[in-house]
Length: 175
Figure 1 (tube, one colour):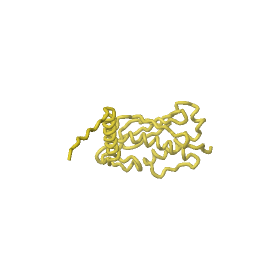
Figure 2 (cartoon, rainbow, N blue to C red; figure 1 turned 135 degrees about the vertical axis):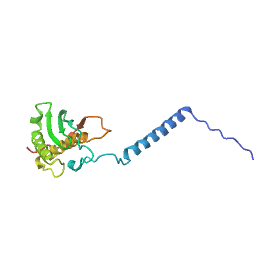
Figure 3 (cartoon, helix red, strand yellow; figure 1 turned 120 degrees about the horizontal axis):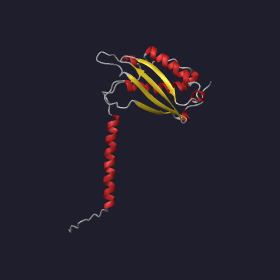
């Protein structure tokens, strides 16, 4: 029995590619673990905002929080002003005067949502017109994003958030 040594020949390029793919695979797995691990420190921002009690601290960080919404190449800002224990004001600031003529349901929907949220301090049981359901949902998403920035959290550093409205999913509404 003769033992013949087996010689493997590796090209350096193949070794480098294999090492890179192994490193990328490990990084991908770490990213998945970080993204999908349960975060027990995260505060629940959906549902009733009045459900947060202030037994140990404030419900909100006082200030004005802005979310910029882009809709068909035009933008507008949704600003939420909070005090320590309540939402005091919700306003819509259009940077272009033609926005109200292009989207006539934007301002009435914002006025209705603002009044309801400021009165009840809750996102539950809001009365939304059937004619403006998509507009109201877009505004409600922007308001929720601004309110989420106002909730005390050490990991949040930004006071402005941007939303991009998918134009293909927003059908024309009845006037």
